[in-house]
Image (spheres, rainbow, N blue to C red):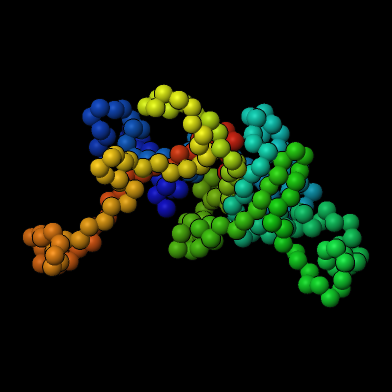
Length: 234
């Protein structure tokens, strides 16, 4: 959750900033904050009007064109936005109103009608849609979105598929990296991806507290590479 929701510490924050850096150098930049700062945002695709939603999608494609976006994209959205997209795509089916479109291939009336779409192509772009439990669950972002308005309520995110080439200064060469990936601190002797150790138990490291304690330690960050190819659905 921290990798998704985290934000950099502002200069006016009460949290002490590191002595070797200025304002905004403490903390980590999560996915939503990175797209807000360096990517794109859209408030369309609401399901109110299918034609309006399609026009909003065309506006998103035009924005991607200006930034040389990747043709294949993943869309992780909440339930309401997923249904709005299904309605938009279903309205494009000219046979739907007459009730003659039963299914795929043999058009059998005995085939269960599938009103959901997992992907579609518009222009030269392919979009693959998936429900994101994190946005629906009231214990996570679903609860945060309750009562939120404007940019505070997040309905989904568009993430480019594939990899991009970056120059690694430490290695001195170009490397292929996914647009969205997680990096963690590691050396030949130790990895901070996820360390665990137990204290206060028989056979484990002792401590002043007469109780068994499970400790967790990690140093990781979310890398939103080429954020101008990402879109946040508010």
